[in-house]
Image (tube, rainbow, N blue to C red; front, side):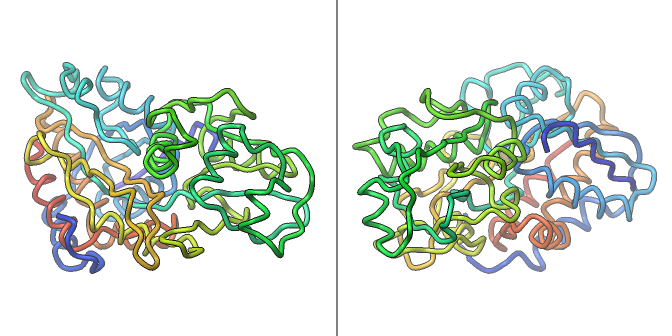
Length: 358
């Protein structure tokens, strides 16, 4: 199968054991017979590297199939999927209650979109500060910086957390996403939960404050920070490249970003309630504070129909989703995108949900 990704934009859970036999069998059963045809996805730029990786693996078994994925952003992906402009979406936020009530144009009459978690990744605070290679921040200080209350790098709040750093007296250039972004949603959800005295805006797909500079997509904010001294942004770890990422104070300890820590948080988090059995939206526990936990995490979903109008499309989407959630797909994404493989428990749940796609 040919997995061709068109990257046109800039750039449960009870077990913490990496996905193994259950996810592997999910991938093989979903794609036991080669499929053919073309399917188109739009969505998360954070998921872009993983999508490229999954398509490359998927093509080895299905030489007559093509997967096109355009990383326009999570919001664009969900909107395009609902309107029928895409056969599936990639999104760092699950479908909202309002979106679930929509008429999904690619789905059969009475069919709905379902959320399949396939990508777990920590969100990092990447920075480019003159003379500084290591930085520690807590939720309150991050909130102050991105709200615009903390304006210079030598602010007392930053100095207190970094007493040995040679912090310049330069102004902080905040860089945030300009597009409707699931990464922004997860970042602001974390701050709304953990920095309530400073971050007064609710979690949002769009950045809520008028501060700093805006850039589109994961690669857009990465490039902006690389090209602007004394700047800072929030970003999926896979997109940070060579930019240093700050340590996050979790449970009183300065913690280094890790996919393992992100996976540990997701493993402790329950599913959202009030959804269909095959809709696996996760209610992330932002209060997790055990050693190594990284609660500033995103879970990114493949959003598909439960039943497609075009059964051939449904067959190919089912096969692709099965591969993405399989052990092979998860391990490949972990290597290329620094994501955390699904736990065996979550992988088994995703396999059951994928099996319902028609």
